Image (tube, one colour):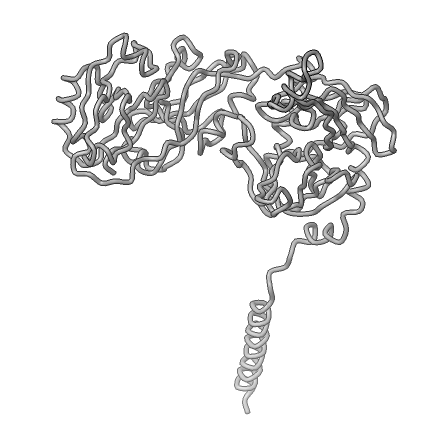
Length: 476
């Protein structure tokens, strides 16, 4: 055997060994499962340290209020005057809830419904000391309130950033359900950004499956770092008890409300003066927007910040100061939480172009609420959605009757024939039609011209119903 042949055999053997080792490595590594992050797995062993750190800042709140029933015939005639009771029966009602200390000098955050109409508020601390509390301020629109006790050097839990929460994160709910003090339950974040729940006017709830029961209201929802990321507020239940769905006000909203209540005694909200509706896929297509996200402006208040900034009806708001807007509730909360006098940039879509407009935040006019609920479009598919519809011009008396501003202009639906295509569109008698296919309608003749120009079965219209303006697609 020559030296060259021997060298070739040795080289072939080495290459074969290396190939076998490589193949074995690939096979064994592909069979291994994806490792779990150690920093996520390790804290799950126990939440005891978190509970020890947070529990001292959680308080028990008990309230007393007078409840009165309307007088019955028995009350009125049980005794002759002056012994008769003309005001009905009264009694003292006691209720319990939870709260969390937010300052070392005795400020406590809780839910508004915990202390609503309370004549006497008593707070019991973790060390069992009891104090009488006074109401600092309340905000029914978010169901939050701040009370104060005369105490010093109280333990305070740190705040977390609720914007960083992810579905699946572990959370703990601490409170006093059914009077069982400092009860701790565990769960996960089930969802974030829950709105239209029907609990408060301003909703951006964290949904959790951590057990929340009567008495938990006002207590903190904390993450595995021991930070407050929400204030437990309500449950969804058909029995009155825990059914796996609880809601908490996110910490970033709660902190803003808390600071305003402590500083001002009330909540001062931002306002830009628009009404909006959610964008559906069908509306996005009609406005030539490729992606179905954003909210449509349906009205702009004259001389409002939005009006001065150049916003128009039909503009689609895509971003608010860099934050993507996917539904009207998100925009409403962001505007409300913005600092008065600050300038925010709105990214809008208008006539197939993207614009960025700066808007100066103003204080919301007293008790003004922008209705942002979604109006669902009709599900019928008529060939002519206006067939069977009769309209008349808007005059001062008609405007007053249907609850619209005369300056809005348009035609009023005064008759819809039963069984006609118009009856299935969702239009109602008294609706004011202001636009058809983005064209202004100011008279019945404009209306007739517009419907003659329609060449498709689905028609985009702007409706004013009792002062609320919204777009809808007829016949789609």
